[in-house]
Length: 98
Figure 1 (cartoon, rainbow, N blue to C red):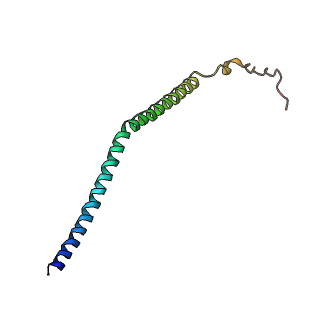
Figure 2: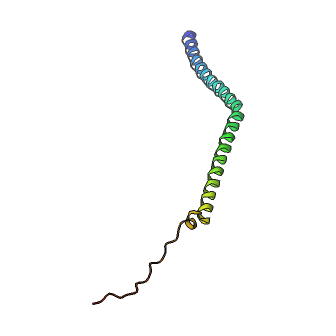
Figure 3: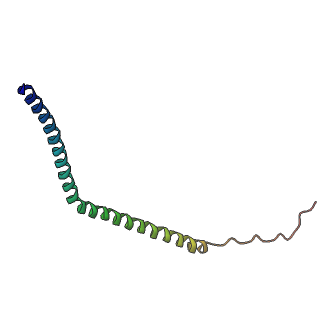
């Protein structure tokens, strides 16, 4: 009579042991992944700031170019005053006859 009870207890122990073992393995894997990511954060942060700095520099250069183009357009080019001016046509001395 103790044999079936012992078998059932052994089976229950195996099921509980497998469940606890797989939970422990998942927790250990999660902890290792967390440590790996935690160590990589400073490098990722440095890389992100490098990308942001590059974006700010490009935006500043574009803004300066646009400002220069607007200022140039506001002042006007020298070509407008450099060309010859058109002369008026001489007045007609005689009126046409009808």
